[in-house]
Image (cartoon, rainbow, N blue to C red; front, side, top):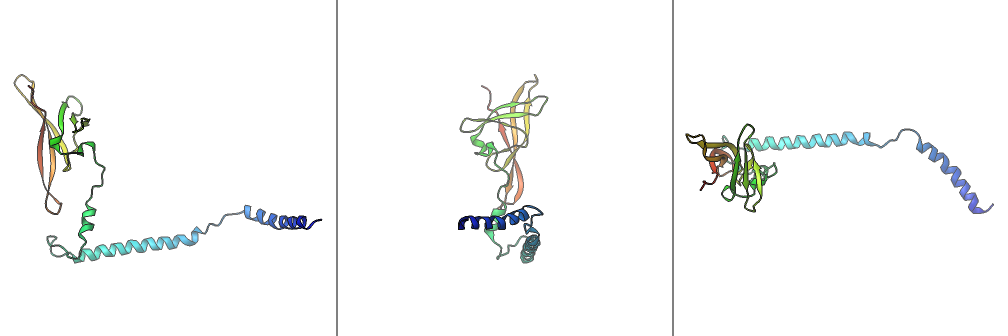
Length: 181
């Protein structure tokens, strides 16, 4: 036999038992060894974050009116950022929107509002509208003696904020249908 054939036979004899042994039995991934370390690290990070919050609360002066000079102002601003996605009617100010139609009846009242680009949107009670996080509070109307509607409008509630961005009060805005001519 040639030398190459002998080497191939030896390789097959050596590797065949290894393949048979490696294919059977349970597979050891080693995850059990590292999982406790990962859990310990996560717990340690959580403890340090809680300790940092506790220290920051201790540094606050007075009853909340005075400002901690060591607190990060930019971090506070980023915490107050909007979490929810913007609704289509939050694209522009209320003065740029046009109320086209209010539909009332047995069901939930619906308004049709046109944005500056000409696109029309349906709006219901609770929807956000305008740039100042206003919400539609109610649909109102005035009726004359004959029972016909004289004037219809939407009441929008906007929060009033102080210098620090905290909600102080609310203001109501009437968003009326244009007068009939």
